[in-house]
Each structure stands twice: as C-alpha cells, then as structure tokens.
Length: 139
Image 1 (tube, rainbow, N blue to C red):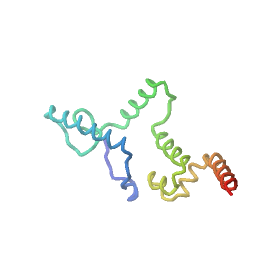
Image 2: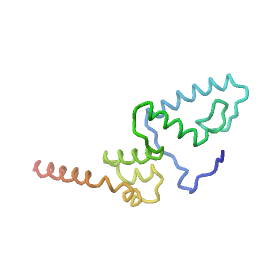
Image 3: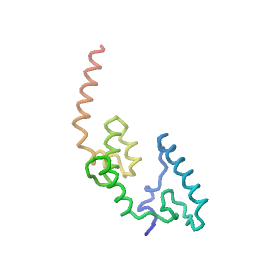
C-alpha cells in the first residue's frame, strides 16, 4: 500500500462534518478501541479505517466492498467516485453556495465547480424563475 501526501497543499483542509458523521465516527472509534484491546499485533498507524489488524485497507478492497453493498441493496452499479459527484450535485440543488461546495471538494475555483456541475443549471434556472414570480406576486 502506498500512502502519500496529498497532491496539492489545498488538498489538506479542514471541513465541517454533519452530526450523523461525527456520531458514526465516534461509534467506529469505540469499536476499534475494543478491537485493539483484543489484538496484541495491532499496527497503529493513525488511520481511521483499517483492516482487523490495523493495516491500511487497499483501495481495491474498498471498491469491492462498496460494489457488494450496492448489489445487496439492489442499487445500480456506480463508481465509488460517483458518491462525490452526487454529494456535490445535491448540495448545489439545495442552493448551497458554489464557493462552499468548491471548498468542500477542494476545487481550485468556484468556476471549476460550476463548470463540472453545469448540468444542474437548467433545474436551478427554473427555481430562479419561480423565485422571481414569487417576488413579483408579493408586491
């Protein structure tokens, strides 16, 4: 397994995590600490997600597990990276400011984010038109 530094300085960043994620991480940490207590050969490398012995998980195994979970849930086969795309799309559709989405994704500019997710613009334009109708109707 090749662990390396991020490709750019901007890749290392702090992000705010939703409550459901922090709760899940706390539960994961508690399970892992119990696992460590039972395992004398634990390889503590500071990673959050590891094998049963504490070694880094291979990317291939993560993808394999992901694909198995999709199949078990009866969901369509998608790439692991599509989760990132879906999250960004959902945030933009909920009117989260593109600058915030850009920073979350680590894009160099909001323009890059908007260009990547420009397929959302037609539905967003309908929202703008409805908002303008609502503004005019109020007066």
